[in-house]
Amino acid sequence: MTVGEWLLGEGLVSIAESTLASGGGKILVIHDVSAAHRMKAELERNQRLAAMGEMAASLAHQLRTPLAAALLYSANLGQAGVADEARARFSEKASGQLRRLERLIQDVLLFARGESIGRDLMLAGDLLQEAAQTVEPLMREHGIEFVTVDGCNEAKIVGSHKALFGALVNLLENAMQATPAGGKICLTGKKSGDLLALGVRDTGPGVELGKQTRIFDPFFTTKGQGTGLGLAIALGVARAHGGSIELFSVPGEGAEFVMILPLGAVESES
Ligand code: ADP
Image (cartoon, rainbow, N blue to C red; front, side, top):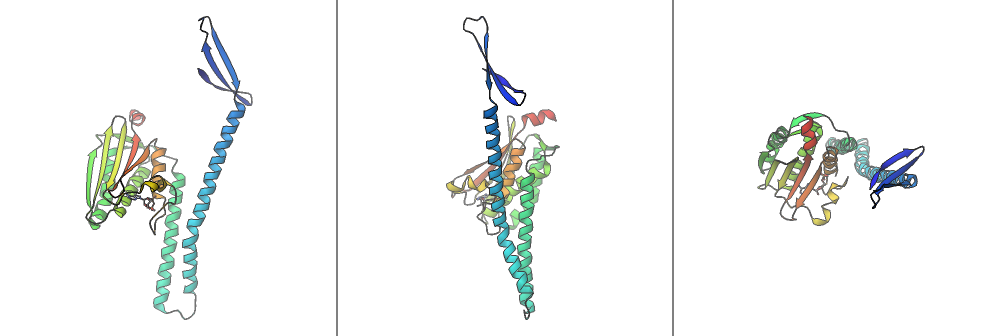
């Protein structure tokens, strides 16, 4: 049985103990695990650097298109002899691309900050109602039936209210964008044991099996104006609260995203 690992000078040793069959004593086995530990740290660092490189490359790629378009439109604006009507159109298009850039940068910042969580104490039911109230008028406008089922049972969460609210609204907005008029979206909150499940179920087209894991990747989007960061941010927020997001979807029959948050440790602190 391993007893533990200790720092010894510059190195790290692991100590394992086993009781002698004769019952008379114990054997302690001391291993120098410094090299293995160094290799593990180096591997983790390389993985972090690779992830950062990938993120930077995708980000540069995502920024380049709207930036190039905005540059073209603004160059057109400066040309002599452009009619007022065309000038107004170019200006609107340039602003549209710049707004897209702004949204992208805001999302990237949110994504980067995903790790730090606040210490707000909130009732899960309140969070559910606030998110519902925010999206209700939009659902009505899109002709989607919207139902909230609150089974949170006074469950409390400690964390970032702003980040959790943003993540939940994002799941609802995605559901709304995927659901055609006449469809239905259901927001549920359920406390079971020491877990809280916040679910968003829609009757949209669902997610193809091959895309079910990819949709959580930063910058994966199937929408013309999407940033592909919404789910990556929501998952980052859930993870920063010790939870996760699960997707249940039968393609063609809708999708359900469930944010699962642990309550145990959180409630005992409150
Ligand atoms: P964005 O909304 O900018 O595309 P997200 O990370 O929020 O970024 O979503 C990534 C992709 O996941 C979407 O482009 C869409 O293809 C898919 N997706 C998300 N939510 C749903 C849903 N409720 N139903 C079907 N597909 C979805």
